[in-house]
Image (cartoon, rainbow, N blue to C red; front, side, top):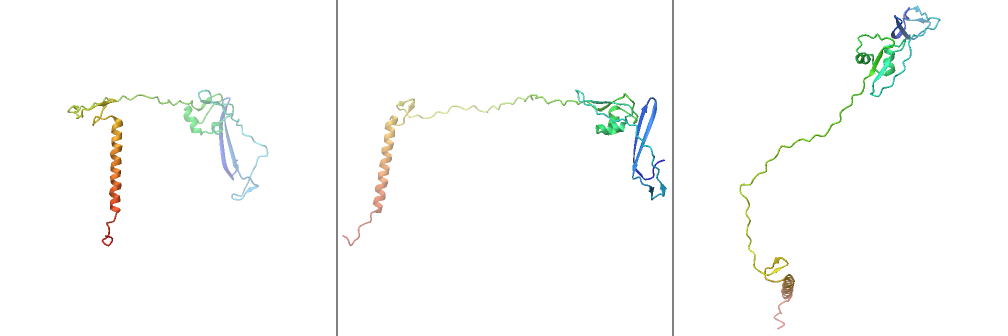
Length: 197
């Protein structure tokens, strides 16, 4: 008899020695009576334990593949819960059409890792570029050079060496400065007044 106040149900299926075992677990709030239906509840006096074996999780092999060998009384649901995958994932990976599994059957839980190839550098050939050719080739332009004395590979303009040229420039600058001072001083002088004469 199924308890009318049950709210949750779990089902397990296994095969042992040619016999199929179906397990139905019901859960709910058990009380002396079910007020909504008026039917007295019947709780069995002997403890009934489910015949489901615990699942020991397998470790991945060297390639990363996880294979679980089904033990006696294990269910597909229990295996899926132990490995934190869905039943549909296990069925798809193993090509199962139904939820039926057998003792000793090897189930692939996780396929081996496929290494991602690392990119390799490849040279991209560049097409050759054409160098533009000018319409007219540049011709050397002649410059006028004043003939003079050569000092250290350089010709001077007034046939003077560098020291003499430097002294001449200093003298010219000094004369220019003196003229500026004299011109400024003469502007500052006031013409004599007519009364002073």
